[in-house]
Amino acid sequence: MKANLVLLPGDGVGPEVTAAAAAVLERVARAGGHQIQTTEALLGGCAIDATGSALPRETLARCRDADAVLLGAVGGPQWSDPSAPTRPEQGLLELRAELGLFANLRPIPVYPALTALAPLRSELLESVDLLIVRELTGGLYFGPRQEQGDGEVAYDTMLYTTAEVERVAHIAFQAAQRRRRRLASVDKANVLASMRLWRRTVNRIAEQYPEVEVEHVLVDAMAMHLMRQPARFDVILAGNLFGDILSDEAAVLAGSLGMLPSASLGATSQGLYEPVHGSAPDIAGRGLANPIGAILSLALLLRHSLELELEAAAIERAVAATLQSGLRTADLGGQAPAGTREMTRAILGALL
Image (cartoon, rainbow, N blue to C red; front, side):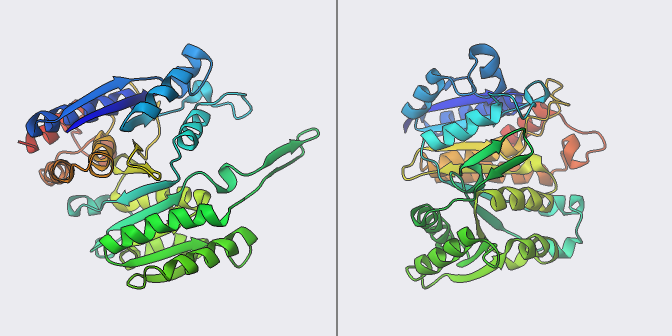
């Protein structure tokens, strides 16, 4: 296997967790005899400081030419002014749109060794295995918006087209086919016209997947169900805003945001992979960040973009074995917590 990857370390703890994932990539590539080249580029706050743009043209060109992209995190307090004309998050949103990445896959791994960390009774976490599929390039994040007059009136429009819903629904149904054949579509169809279009379209696409059981759940009800009966669900399909909120809520099932990976996919094998957590500027540069979200994002990259299932599964087993051994970073409640390097070394050791 020959492949070209772009690494976007970004801001805060991004460079630290990206370096951890890169070390794991080097190990599995060498073991499998794969020639995987990596180059680094700027995105986010560091790119603003260096070039004035959150997504420099050179970065976009490199990403377009790559087989896949691995991202650390973007943002930080020095770029946090919401009225600033250029913000780190704009670079990430633009990159997703430019690469045509319309579906965000967020698996929620629940490890038995970590169930005590979740604010739920351990029996509620038995058999929990969720995949949240979030629409990524539509809805409120990309709809028409305006702030009028003296700033006393503003609006953001939740805009969806049938085609946008169709393409992400196919991704979700196909994932459900490979899993437990259950799909819950989240909307607010009792109030919002855009969500009624969403529900009609999902129902129509469901006719092509008769083996998948479909239910529609209002977003407020889903927020409650995730805490009361998470094992009831398999694949959860949601729009951009609702998917963003629900996936962060579901992170408590895994014990920490630091555990969660994500994959942003489009119509081709190219994808953008990143941990769900933010840049965590309060611990940046201190070697305390949990690298597991980034390392599991690498596993998703190997699976979805490079079709290296054996290597992806090996990484996931190594993470599970490391957690089972009792090693914990600070976010996982370790009394003598391991740092980023210690956790990475342990995962590398479990790969042998």
